[in-house]
Image (cartoon, rainbow, N blue to C red; front, side):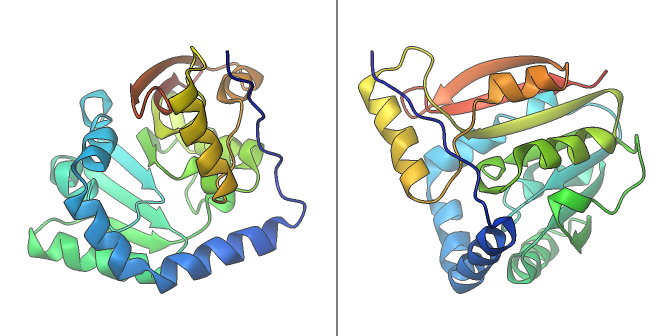
Length: 212
């Protein structure tokens, strides 16, 4: 069985976020193109859609908005992202499909919403980019209604520790993502959750957590 090492959170969290934000600004248009043409990536993130419940939905760190174009018209949808360039691209992508969503710039560590506001919260391929996992999780839970759903897709180690899946998770970690022990994190917040491996030899996980 392959050995795993979870990432350490950065000491300088502000600088970590600044570098991520700068990188997304630099490659925003390329990122938008890659998301649209990479079928596996689209398949992974779209697996959250059947689990959306309620009327008010928030997508945190929506990137270029591909996922929003697939569900936002059916809900009272809000979106928040740190990067202003990605927000502008998302607005254009939604306008092309005549879809409306309440989009704004903001940080997951300080969400601009009142407590218990959303029925479902979506976060795909983004949690590994947050420098403080506990703070980010605390904010997501704060704005989620009791019994509301938190739906996350992201990279992690495969449960069976197969070599290819472990290699992919380690590669993502070396590329700058923070690979966390998500089971430990969910349990620290006393959340009921499921963990399903949905791709990339078990290195892409779908987490469905229910608020207390």
